[in-house]
Length: 122
Image (cartoon, rainbow, N blue to C red; front, top):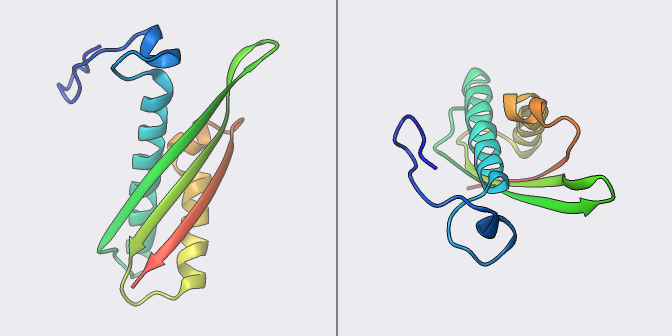
């Protein structure tokens, strides 16, 4: 698989998805897109609120399960650590939670249970 932008060029196969093969798979790409989208949305919202972040580091753990009707993505757990000068914990959590609900990838994945563990670092 190769992205048109050149950002990725690598192995992509059934074995990398459900076996021991090397390379990426659709679920890994979705999780990466979700983590990136959430980070961007959170940074933008924090900046609009007058608290531009120094850093935001987000990971996404995606769960795929075999159901009677086939494989389904059942959950995505977002974990973010952010350094945001001048903001209190409650305001940070509220902004992060809103970004989880409204970033475009979250909206596209509305049928998936998305959780968020957001930590404000000092």
